[in-house]
Amino acid sequence: MTYGEFAARKKLNGYAVDLGGTKTSVAHIQRGEIINQETFPTQGSLRLDAQLDLISSHLFSLGYSRKDNLGFAITGQIDRQGVWSAVNSETLPNINGAPLAETLKNRFGKVNCCNDAIAATLAEFYYGAAINVQDFVYLTVSTGVGGGVIVGNRLIESSRGLAGHFGFTSVNAKSYTAVANRQTTVEGSAGGKAIASAAAALGYDKNAKEVFMSAEAGENWANDIIETSAQAVADLCANIAVSLDPELIAIGGSIGLAPGYIERIETHLHRESAFFQCRLCSAQLTADGPLLGALAYTDAKYL
View: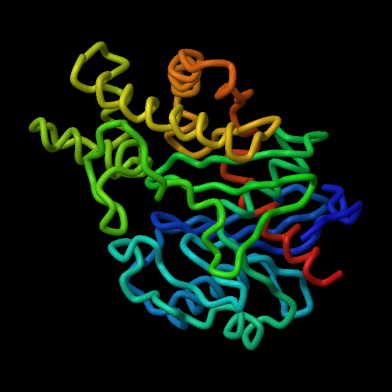
């Protein structure tokens, strides 16, 4: 898929949804700016129709009507036919082979859907960290690890919808959780779930945010866990450098944007030979990225 001048941020007008594993946001966007937004916990146990009932109520409260442009960014796997499956079955246990694109069209009319990391990739490429970059990779390090790829100004998408699921790739860093029955993965070493599991194994009942706080307070056990996470992401960046050769990798997500985290990644990456080096930066659009990208993606589909 290629994108043109329509993607100028001021031309973005409509509504967008970002359904994540932990929270869901709906937003009204005018001239590329979010003018109103509602965020609420994702009800992970709901089936597709019930998920959309909840989202619809928030959209309509923001003033949405069926004639408006609407973009959906969704966590998980969306194949080329718009069939949605949860990558993490613990997060969305009742989403497996759900006919998302067809159901959205029947409910809302002019709407399209994409993976949330793909949406964030597109937003960073056009409106954020990667303006004027032709070859770009976005990585989100949050509860899990995902991303998206742009090569030669072209967003890379695949038939099964797995392009950019970097969290499933293997690294040498110690893993704390298995991902899709694979024992040594980036997500199993670096993601928020893995960080919390590592803390629990040491006897600390703390989530990822609390582990970061403990590391900042000088607690060695927490620092070691965060260091392992950063090492895994650095290994991933090195692998991306020699497989895709991007001009830039932007790091986003709640963990990726934590104070000092990207510097930890860079420290590990700089120990590699020049062959594996790649320029890194922090994502600029934070939580707005998937919302802006979802609407831009829908605009592109309807050109």
